[in-house]
Picture 1: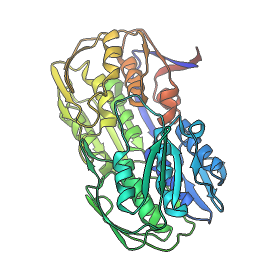
Picture 2 (picture 1 turned 90 degrees about the vertical axis):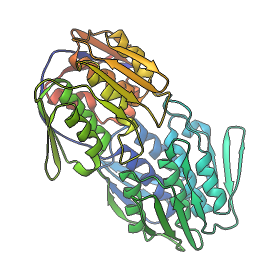
Picture 3 (picture 1 turned 45 degrees about the vertical axis):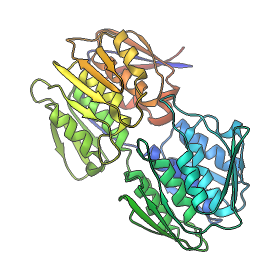
Picture 4 (picture 1 turned 180 degrees about the vertical axis):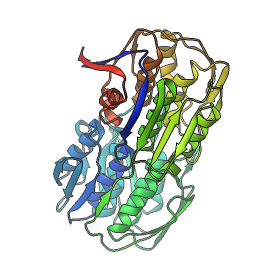
Length: 419
């Protein structure tokens, strides 16, 4: 099992290219199951999560070809059962339920694994499938959905902590082959949902309203193959912008959609950093002493929960008292204990972290608990004195394409070693 060693104290400068979005790629790859014809997807990031999804598609009977970020999937014949051994490593594997139900009118998928960041139930997915006319059973760790036919319906997918992104994806994929019109109220507005809708429309679906709280899907009888380019990963971009804020003299992220990053760049501006956004690039630079901040995570277009841990790392050395409230996954603070090992001063009050900025952090052995927490510990290590040793970096490999190599390009002293 690999570890990452971060030697603190090196300034970051320069530019990097952002990879395709993990959270777009996974449902879009699942959506290729909706047609017998070949689909070609460009800018698929080289991640363990995308590898797992391609393994699932292969297990289900699809033919998969991959070369240099381009994936072609031909699902001429598919089976509708995905057992635990295939799906256990990744929560997003539940995203095959919608397309399998849409195409085969039945699916059996084992309840998946994923990050330990609190309860992430799929009850809203199942509620949506039932509204479309499917019978749903959960037994022996498996979800079984089946229907003689699917019929359009009005479905509200807003949950306790806001809209469900993967639930919106799943119901939208099932509804494209349903008879009649489906209206998804309380839909997630994330750019990744829009990206999936764009791909489905290229396949012949009729979807309107993606990017709003109300998505309308007019069912069609069949879909065809299509070619698609994945949008840039806004969370990867945000992570490198925060890295530039923590340890940079001027860091530029290229191949991004600045409008997808407004909440993050607004937060960095509020913290006192200079932000310059152009057509497909954003630069973060120092602009005097950073200032403390108050942040609340919210569904898009609010501040993303997937950037909360990275901001904790930044604010831990920002003079003054900063406050972060986690509204999406209230238990998502596994990184706090590890940051404290490095000298951070953070007090938890329910789902709120009160951060007293310290003058310096000190390198220490720390353990990653989930994807974004692991990135936050690496970022903290950039600022810390000495060496920070981050274990369980397989979490990083789930969602960041060559994080250590890209940081090295910017001037970080970072190395990956065998544990």
